[in-house]
Length: 265
Picture 1 (cartoon, rainbow, N blue to C red):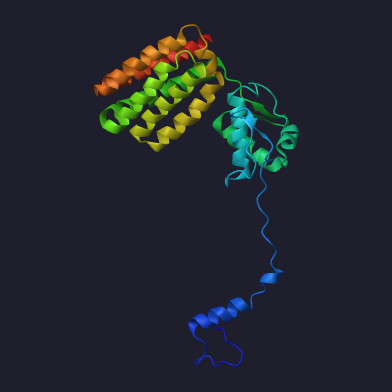
Picture 2 (cartoon, helix red, strand yellow):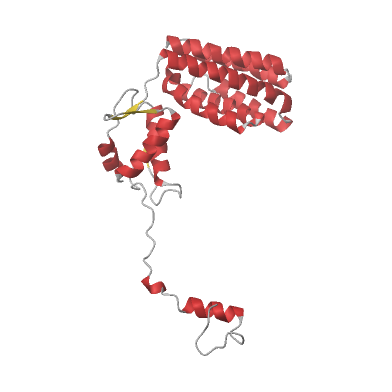
């Protein structure tokens, strides 16, 4: 039991007075100030937009997560090409950070399949083989076709309107591959969200990151954008009709066609 000078234990200070006494005698002056977490240099370019980063501190996420996001953007944009060695020392200097958060970021990207760690050789941007693509698309076809079937049955009218709006973006982006690619991604991921299986969403998100290492090349294949849009029209029509089994079949065929285009790209 805490006792206070000149105060009997039974007739002591009230509860609040005791707390005030304790806190008034804590040695706060001896505590070291908390140092802020380091951030990337504010003058680094925004790699996603190709523009200078706005001045000021980055968000409150862990530093390695911010670095991972920057590197992910560069990898998917092929600024860091498949198969290329990742120069940790140069990147740490470029970002104005130590190699510790950089290495943590590389571990995150390795778990996503975007980076391959080689013993005593360092980190490399993953090269996707034809077999890799076939396996990724096979899993996507299974997972996303089932998600589309579920979404056809459970989507609310509001959610169906959202899907239709994204589809309209696809229609208007037929002459802009980057816009088409972004709208296509949103459509597929929105279907997964409506189907509402968080484990499936997580697996598909990781598979799509690997697919993106080659995906843009497959969309450049002659006629693939137009064919993909036609497939999406059929999928959207089946969704509106709430024809769950037809949606499942169409989505499976759509991803099979994507696999064939990727293999030939």
